[in-house]
Length: 407
Image (cartoon, rainbow, N blue to C red):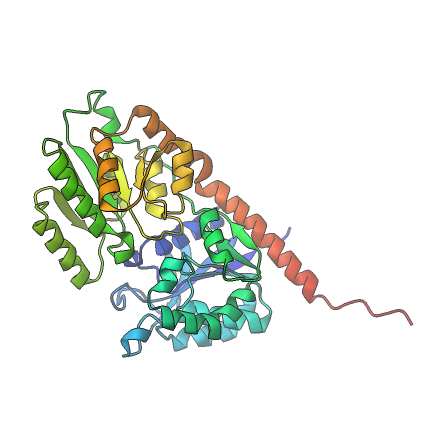
């Protein structure tokens, strides 16, 4: 019997405060393990704002059935390098254990754990693929541009070009990165979502949807990229144009304290204080309930390589209102599972006005069907396992010594 593939997933953080990428890697590894892949996670004790003192370090732990090992991180006092947090324990562990694995799946770039893991794997001849989590999009590269371009040219370009494949979660993400001229082949494979039997409870109220409050849900990390500020401006315009409309915005997520205060102040100054409910970080059953109780998920991001919250909403039968910069928006529009519009406040306000009253039953059905047919983890994990096996096989073939020439 062939031994299972041993795959190490490397990510700087599994904190919920880091948003979709952290959750996605946990779900990905769980789905792979259900298929018999010996997948595990190497990370740090980052919690999004500092360190997670409750996370044991330096030893394997079980996190909901997933083997995980974390090491302490140390952030430089220089603000520009804060995200490039060093982890000496992680370095030492990789030196000893890297060859225990057939393959590395690295999540994120411009971060010490990922950067170092790629470097070590490159020198050791262990194959790896890289999920860039949107960090090579034009919008992302424009943030702290000088620092990122310097790091890309000096360090990450070599790491990326040494990968067996670059994992993109949508064709739009692949196309954005094409201009950089990176060498590895592209693997376009979306992230998945856990399906359950929970259906959208709003759909069960009845067909007369105009006499009730339309519930918009913003569920994401509170970060300027997500453009919640534009959504608030759009809702203020909606308030002026349709003062009779009954709606509320539920905001689930956390961010930097200063930015959170800025958003709260903006909502108050726009007269939206009574219509906005700030829920903070929601997880588990609380998040499932918010998704199932919403009429629409709204995500007007400036850049989004996938949008895991969108997939979760669709699985709950909740359609989405998205900006075109959310990579999964094309899939949503084609399936009729939501609405896509520019993120400028006037255009967004117009689309929100159309959404008052809630989506049609057909749109809700399209949302759930899209999640079942295209975004369920079992099918995605199966495709990923096949790609892993192909990469490992090719690496072993290339590493095998050539047969001696006949005398």
